[in-house]
Image 1: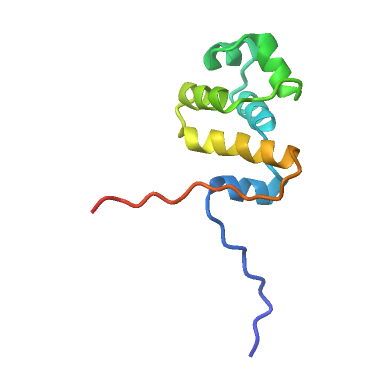
Image 2: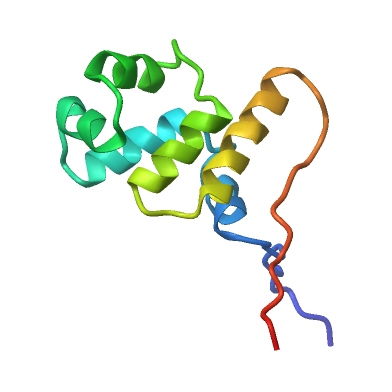
Length: 112
């Protein structure tokens, strides 16, 4: 007997799961989603991130790219692992350059 159920693709992490749902995740749409979920104004969120409101607006609109250093700063401000934010930025840079390359975060093995 054969099964007609489709198997879910194997995921390697949260970032991959989110990208499966809505396409490639960018730092811009991630920050907008975070800010809107927290119901913060751009001014309030910019203060939390340590940037000006104008800079945050430019980032959200895609007029200003997020650098690796800035992604790391945002991760620290939002109390998240910097690897995830940096990975998001690197993937976006690679896509925009038209390079077919997949970048991932290696699994960390727990110390015995």
